[in-house]
Image (tube, rainbow, N blue to C red; front, side, top):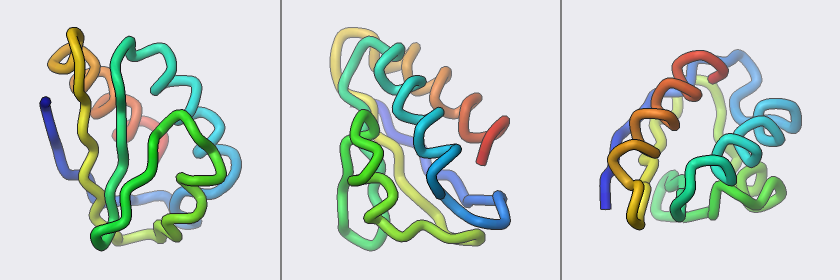
Amino acid sequence: MTNFEYTIKDELGIHARPAGLLVKAAKAAGCKVTVEKDGKVAEATKVFALMGLGVKRGDTVKVSCEGDNAEKAAVQMKAFFEANL
């Protein structure tokens, strides 16, 4: 398992558009990807679960990648977060 933390910079946090893009990126990652905020965990492949975390600008989330491609997926997911959130 590989983890990283990221502080959200998008003014609206994780809302519908970036959540949809995040789902696509997580599905392409080739392993299980989860996002955690304040002890609540959501699978990154489920848009409503992500939006249910209530992530706002300035919140720090922990992203975990678990599986065969975890390290490569973590690099890809971190790049996604930096470019989109």
